[in-house]
Image (tube, rainbow, N blue to C red):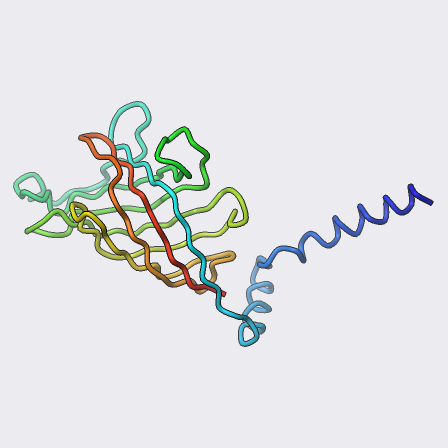
Length: 188
């Protein structure tokens, strides 16, 4: 009897796993999720992590993909564009635990001051947000001590996300930077 109970408990655990997750995938799952949306309560999630950007060397994570015909003649390198796939970690040390990746592009978008236009996606690969993403689109005045960027969407547990990300440069040299991010995300 004990063996049968153990098998039954294992079977129930395995069978109930998809229901434990808060997000059902696929078109039907999204449709069902939207049907229940009026009953869902908004949540606020706060996240903190570090973004590591390296533009040269053996650990390079960002590559120049374009520039304008005037990029090299302007003080801000107007039009120069980089695509990146950067690690996100829980501590400033790149060897600390990775929780995801920051993927997207940034372009020098101002003639007067160093300011990037950023399309940034945080792709979470660990923990309770594994498989979820947050999307940013906006301006990043890179030499401001603290910058604010809009969170304009999300997937997975962050469906219909919106919020604010604050970025602060933790470390900067000619080939790499570490940016500390604090996010406040409203989602369902």
